[in-house]
Image 1 (spheres, rainbow, N blue to C red):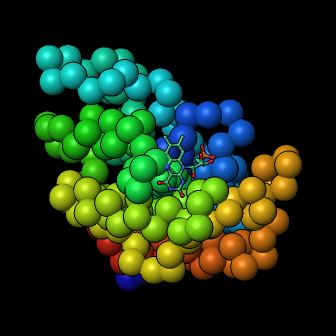
Image 2 (image 1 turned 30 degrees about the vertical axis):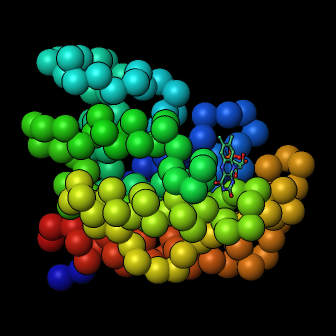
Image 3 (image 1 turned 180 degrees about the horizontal axis):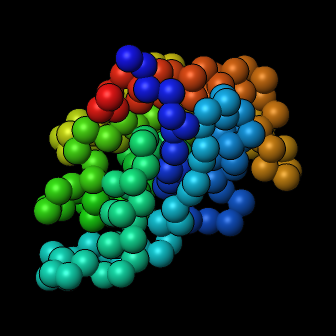
Length: 187
Ligand SMILES: Cc1cc2nc3c(=O)[nH]c(=O)nc-3n(C[C@H](O)[C@H](O)[C@H](O)COP(=O)(O)O)c2cc1C
């Protein structure tokens, strides 16, 4: 039988900067959420840089992050592009969450999206992110791809996503994430 409990989504922006387009993209997602979904966010600036000497125990912020990832029904990652790849902040968070015992990323449904000021809308970063998520056992929504190029035109000065086509792709991604998560969740 189909699981119709509300879906709790954890949103993660790979950019730490104030005024980040990717953080604004998460805000747009919160506004466009279909019924039956709720979005919380985790601020990656709380996490220290990964150090394998500091895993036993994990630092408190890391433990909290891992708990929140574990509790979420699915993740929504806004992935900026730095030098044709994902940001160090995002990779760092994945590295912390990937560690045993019981990585909370294993079999976690994930949707990815991204905004950049370049012409390719984070496509290269998202391809790297997909590869990493596959490695850690996450289950990444295949389509639609939300690739927002020339972000300074897609968002207004207040960080509102004003590009109608982008809003449509984002809406479709959220619907796809809901369907994907309900298929993957244990009954
Ligand atoms: C170190 C660095 C490298 C960047 N490399 C790329 C890149 O490879 N491709 C691209 O489209 N934009 C690149 N940019 C521009 C980012 O797309 C832009 O800074 C964007 O605003 C970052 O996302 P944010 O607004 O969420 O912080 C780079 C920016 C920085 C700071």
